[in-house]
Length: 363
Length: 232
Image (cartoon, rainbow over all chains, first blue to last red):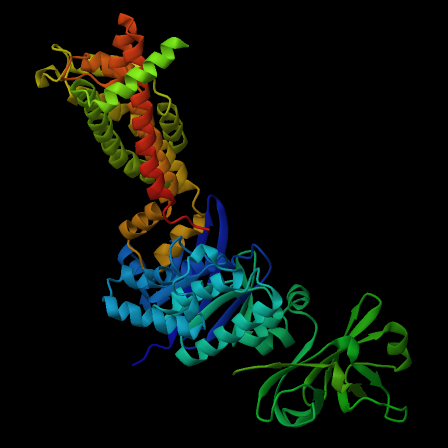
């Protein structure tokens, strides 16, 4: 029988000196999933990754790898041979790119031609075959990042752990590296756990998310759940207040797309082709509400909605609306009074096709 | 001024004519200090790496001891070794006082802390996560340590140069434990001291120049190795 949980953590405590840096009561990573740890700096994301990699001995609690309890030095060695970590910095050795990528295979005493083959494959995966002979210290930031990823993937590990893998890359390079990583994870079906702090990276890559703060897991669930139903204000501020809708492109006519979300269809501007699965992000300040459709509404997306919740936030109100999908809107205090809004009321809501930020999703 | 010119002329003569006595002294210096440096390299790099990577009580104290050892006065080492191998000393039965072996031991004691201290710093200056990165790629502890040592090869070769430079130029310990016996335990530095004492400045200058040339050539070779694959 195939083991479904790659990693399971129970009642884990990690201490540094007298300070408890990690306190996780339960965490499960399923096989084949891309799992993101998000949260502010110092939340314990890196420590969690080190613990999962068998590089840090927990003070208390259980760590299971493929349902096997990791208890001894020998167990941790076994775990280290099955998991690969990519750190925030590329941490390449001062030798050639080839030697860097071959490093882990050499530790495993692989055969020479086998090592050569695997290094070649890994270089091809990340499109860096031309760098093979170069000195690793002469690479640019993006190249070094790709080499450090290729070094981990060359091992074909059961689990790959990535600590902020896109840190300190310039935006175009970051985009390209994310695309490569996404494609390779999909092809290899390797389970990945990554510490991220960018909402867009999380949305694009992760299927499951755990939100961490001060060494604890505050909320965990699917990506859409965390982004649309953050458990508290802190998480909400962190993941942003946009509504994130999962949809599929129905058709695209010269850049104007029809995207089906649940049973509804919205229009958005973009260049994804029909059949593409997407996330549609709508900022709450771009959503307008009105009593009826009598006033002229130029927006392309108009829906009837029920007010589910009204939350007062300073000088404006946050409305959680249900229009077949969940939508968040901001309105000012006077307009809220004008519209005589209350929870359960029916209203009309609208947003422009250009207000929808469309992101591809792979799952 | 004339003295120096005379010395240079004499040095040239001695080198060109391959004077057997000078040649013997030079070769012995090279052998003794080379061996002492090699022993220190093995001891210093391994101990330095262990202290750099291990976590134990009193680690800072040990590191300051090592750093103090880098400035160990050769005469003090000479005195200590002499007492140890003196006829009635604890190792007197070995009967090695006034032998080249005694010089090697004394010089190894001088060079070991130098190489240890620089190795320690060299391993410590590697990024902290590098150890974890290497382990996470599946290395055993031994494999990890070996990769770290290779990664620190530049400063480690500097350690070798510092160690060798320290012992080839040292005179205090060599003269005390070696005895400056002609054709047996006389090395360049002890010979220079003796010739100067006798007023043979030209020979002393010649020996000094040969010593400098020797140190220069050894370091030239080591530098070639060190800079061969200079990381950009």
